[in-house]
Amino acid sequence: MSDLLERLRGRGWRMTAQRRVVAEVLDGDHVHLTADEVHARAVSRLPEISRATVYNTLGEMVSLGEVLEVSTDRRAKRYDPNAHRPHHHLVCAQCGAIRDVHPAGNPLADLPTDERYGFMVSGVEVTYRGTCPNCAATA
Image 1: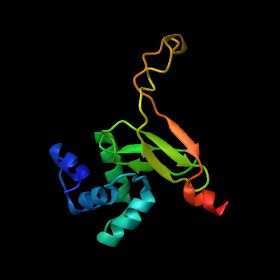
Image 2 (image 1 turned 90 degrees about the horizontal axis):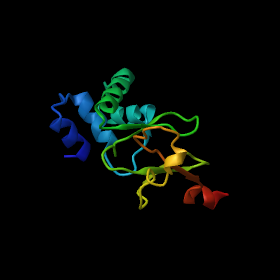
Image 3 (image 1 turned 180 degrees about the horizontal axis):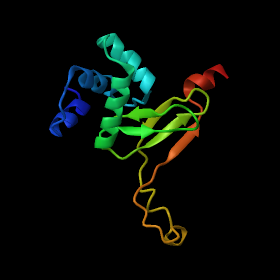
Image 4 (image 1 turned 180 degrees about the vertical axis):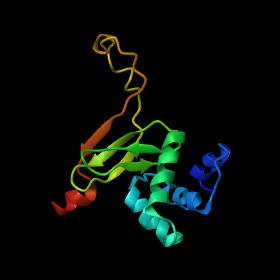
């Protein structure tokens, strides 16, 4: 059973066939699919699944904190099942490919107290941008 499915079951989330397929499609390392990509892959496994069901299921998974909603640039939102291991993203400026990265250190600790302007900082999102090997090879 996938890590995402195990986490959802552990929360007592009712596992319908549609929810199971969406979770299975999202499972894996470096998975950052759009809702339309999730739907296309889900349909290949369960032809009767609707786009609305996929969107609703993704929204529920995000609300539960089991999937992250990732927005980069002005592209479609992507869904990241790696919600429980702190990480940042590496994004290709050409094709939009996204990889999870786990640099050493604590980026929150790198923000000096006088640069916090009184904010109680609760989190950090770091996005590294560059060109992936595939796009670099065709340039």
